[in-house]
Every structure is written in structure tokens, then in C-alpha cells.
Image (cartoon, rainbow, N blue to C red; front, side):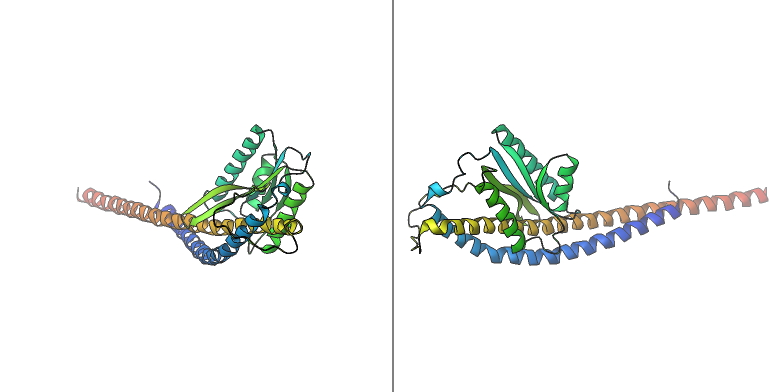
Amino acid sequence: MATLKAIRRRIASVKSTQQTTRAMKLVAASRLRRAQEALFNARPYHEALTRVSDSLLASAPEALGAPEGAERARLLVVVTSDRGLCGGYNANLIRLAEETMAAARSEGLTPRLFVIGRKGAEHFKRAKTPLEGERVNNAPRLATVGLARDVAARMLHEFRAGAVCEAGVIYSSFHSALSQRPVFDKLLPVKPPEAAAGAADYLIEPSAAELIPTVLRSYVEAAIFHALLEGEASEHGARMTAMDSATNNAVEMIARLTLEMNRARQAQITRELMDIVGGAEALRG
């Protein structure tokens, strides 16, 4: 059995860890509320832009495909986090990225990776996977319009130049603090939307052909920004859940160690009493 001093030292260490995890849980909960508000506030704009884009892009499906002679390659933008301590958040995204890369190879496509977040970049560098680019140190906010525009511009440039024939984004879809699901959205080439009954017919000025490049850029930028918002909320939700679990585990460990300490102390007292009684019997005899 461990000594009382060692058990007390371990209890103090676990209590210190518990204070850290509890503080991180509270910070993650606060950031999650802000990320949720940003995500929910942006959804109406994203949905409205998608409706307008679908209506416009349906009028010129020939402008949506990859350029003739484009390389058989798929550009994957993978949205991970810069920091860890968020459970399986990054591991699940990396697993989906590797599965999507394998699926691309089976289709005769060369996968090309652009990674957002230090954790994803470090993993693929360790795995000796070539990267088309990376964006790390995105604190304090992952979801920024500037980052979304930069990534969308790169994606569109490579697609229009024929460097890739497909492009998409892998991110974690936020459902709740307890539920996040990694997903892959293929953004380019844009699939011509089917005409729906009762769909709005927009009056376009100057012409659909002239507006398509602008609308396509806005469409991709909005999709990337939406992925960043979902990823930011998912990261904070996953971290809050992981730190809550760690805090609860610390409480249970402290209870077990306290019980072990009491047993050790009781055993020590018993031994001391036996020594006293033994000494008294020896003197009496």
C-alpha cells in the first residue's frame, strides 16, 4: 500500500488538475455560447444566398463544370483546431480526411490537402503527406470573413486554372455540445440545382452570364465561412464536454484516493496500537 505522504501528494496533484479542467470547461462554455450565436445568426444569410445562387446557377449549368483538360485531382480543405484537449474532435476529422483521400484515389483522383488548424497540419506532416497549404494560429477566432475569402479564392483559382477538377471542405457539423459530426461537402464543380416547383424567378441585371463569376465566388466564400462557423462551435462544444468529463473523473479519483488514504491511516494507527500493546505485554511479562 502506498504511504500516506505519497497518497496526499497525489490527491493534491489531482485537485490541481481538477481546478484546471473546471476552468477550461467554463471558458469553453463561454466561447461556445458566442460561437453558437454567430452560427445561428449566419444561417439565414447562408440559406438565402444558397437560394439565390441555385436560381442563378441553374440558368447556366454549362458554366459550372471544370475547365477542359483539368487535372484529375481533388482539393480538400480540412478544418481542424489549433489546440487540443477537445476529445476526439480532431481525430474524427483526420479520419474522415484520410477516408476521403482514399476514396479519391479509388476514383482515379489525386488528393491535395489544404489544412486549417495546427493539429491537422502536424498530423499530416508526421504522416509525410504533402500539403498544398496550411493556415495555423487562427486564435482568437477561427471563423473570420478574411480567412474564408482567402481559402475560397485559392480554391476557385486552382479550379479555374485546371489544377484540380474537384474541390470540397471537411469540417465538423455542430448539432449540440454533446454531438458533432465530421462531414465532407463537395463545393466544386457546383452541381446544377434541379428546378423546384414554385421556385422564385429572379429578375437579373445586367445578365446571368455576367453575374455568375461573382455569385460563384460569393457562394464558395459563404460555404467556407459556414464550415468555419460550424467547426468553431464544434470545437468549443467538444472541449467543454471533454473538460466536464475530466473534471468528473478527477472527483471520482479524489474520492478513491481519500478512501485509500483513510485505510492507510487506519492501518498505521492499528500497527502503532499493536506495538504499544506488545510493548506493554513485554514489560508485564
